[in-house]
Length: 484
Image (cartoon, rainbow, N blue to C red):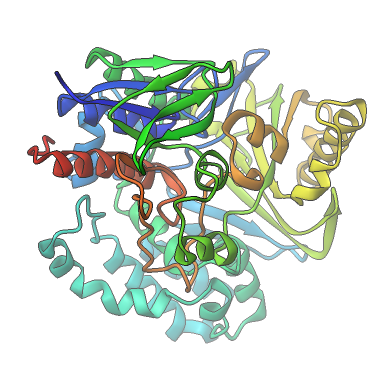
């Protein structure tokens, strides 16, 4: 009789684990508390508009790369078309200064030199390094051969391991420094993280899948079902059952229990370790991660369906404010708007979708009774404030908004259970740069973890590969040869 495995969570990690477990002969059952697959890799429809939460680009989208082959085995690449943008973002300040971070290093060089010729040495080195990084391929198993292939890039990892703020402190021009800082994201993350994304986009290895996030999740779910796997929706786990320090099954919210030879939790890490397992299989190192590492901050995700053509607005626009704007208790130095003009499947002809996200204070939203009138009014106020700021840049949009949708950190908690509403797990910071988080908890057998909380940097590659790795570990425990 084939060994059985229960997989908690039908997000990208859970779907990946399910597929690879089926490929390796396990009987599988995925338990997902929502009604659709994908977890955070999702989208929703409102009055003919699709608001996409997740995929901005998919690292490993280039045929022939190791990551592409993993996606292909999961059914993700069949019939998939990709859009390859020519820019990472356009950044604009309040004084008319603007730069576009082009994915082509030569074009990027010309753009940055235009702003600050005095920074030629820094700009030249930066663009040459991006060109070098564009040849770096994400590994799947990190073998000795992979490490050897990474040797030429070790110096670049060291150079850009510091924070965005620290790396850009070398830039002489305050205008260029501020624009680049806004364009590359939070100052607390390592510069290497966004730089690698930009380089992969330039190499046509991080394209945007036309159709967005949910069809990608649905494609893997189809592959999983075709392999004979079972997925049960509306199945919320409340505890992991252990016996003699071995995971034996789970207890669901309706009180029922399900048992298997193995359990893989692809759900929220904090909930898994400290709630479902009561902290019984946790050492000081793991506690330290949850006390000291920086998760991606909670966000308010705001979407607008607009009754107008948006081709005159940059694909990704970041507005840098002279004076921070306070929204819902948080001072915002920047706001980034994403124009989905490159994917006409998301909106009716002649119309368009813009989404944006702002950093949120979890406690601010947590104290508002969920779905209360006060909560709804605050959501509406936030959406209107953010839309007003967009209309200051493009006044022609002011009367064109047909529908607005606002998701708060509490929305994330409701649908994914993510700790403090974080949308992507751990950030890549100088402290977590080379960190390899354990997927197996000390003292507990028959159990492993996968997903955003066992990798740094978040994203689909980390989720998918961690699900694959969990199955590979089960095969190793059983003395089975891992297939695929």
